[in-house]
Length: 575
Image (cartoon, rainbow, N blue to C red):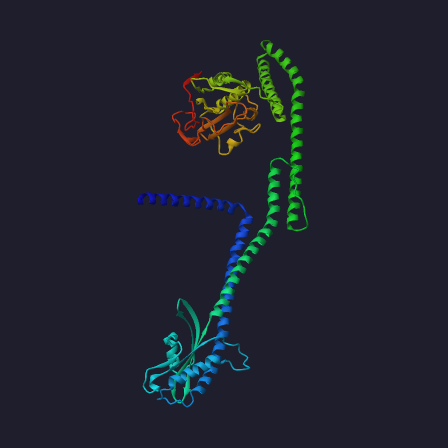
């Protein structure tokens, strides 16, 4: 039974702690994100401190004033009462047994009369309880005699009065089931050498009620004031935050492409100046964007028009060059060599012109993807064939690492083959005669092809530049494949047209690796690439499952794959 209760208490405590942490986390998020909440709570906290200090000061001042007024009135009333008592005790024989009766008569006289002097400017002291006490040494060596609640008078006050001083003290006594606080005034009475003391007990019930009322009023007033301050702070902050939030939302819409988004200008204050500045900035940016769009349109049109205009004279030059090339056997050796160089340059010029036309169509957005579900492995093999002879001439060995099973995907074979051909040609150009390894991997969502060379590599920052048009890592290097400088740029656009991506990695002296990643279904995204670049982590987490990947492959090195991942089975060497 006890263990069950302990388990229940532990569960309740755990739930309470979890609930508290959740609420604390939610509040922390709101605190970080809401300027209005921070300002309101900060104002409320500081106002609470000010109201608390002010309330304490007011309560102290009011209490001090009430008690001081009560003391002044009680002392004045006590002095008047002393005169009455001295008048009643005139002619009393110290050894007479009538002392107690005379004390009683004096006490009754005090109770029945008003001790405040007529015409006094001081306020009345209120109700009181008188006490008269006589020392035994002064009254015939009899026991101490007193009239009134002498037992309620504290010993400290008695000693001060017996020493001949006027003294006062606030003291709380028990009266049945209640505790009553009195202001006690004690004063010695001088009459025929008698050792008499007069004590006036003034209850502070009314003063306590007044203080409690003041305290309650201060608490209620403080709470109301705090609520009003919080509401005012919230309202004022809202007036400032709302335009800022509107500006943030307008900026987000502007960033999303709504270039006509503007802020309303209301008034002439600082927020209106902010709106005017934002509108001026947006107008300037919109103008620059439109200017760039017009410039880009003119540039694309110029490229397209020039490319089309060059086709006709190029065709004529090609026909003449072919005639000369066919008759080069009849020419002297120098002229025959010039004819061969002319044909080679014409081939390169035709490739450049074709690339310009292709990239102009991509820029214009008129290219459409004609996808069909095919096995990607034959595409990889066909992409390698045109580069095989060049690889043999440079001494590079092309190694294919392909899966044993079909790797089907909805792609346009022509574009994928062009991408891979450009990547393989680029790897042969910069491979420095080292092996070039091509690897194909896939999972349920995507497929990836990596082309890894072990040549000169890329310097830091060049991996982001290799896809720029006409960019070359080292312009002084001789090219073996006669590239135009647009191959990787076109390849990147082809990959994006499929909904995929093209990434690059490289290190000086360690070669480079390019990775093509494509979704297996058109229009369906993917969470990660099945293959990794050499600079990626050793593992990748897919659906909360971490899969370590093999590291003995020279292409992927420390590769990653999305679960479930298929890896290359056969390895082919193309010579």
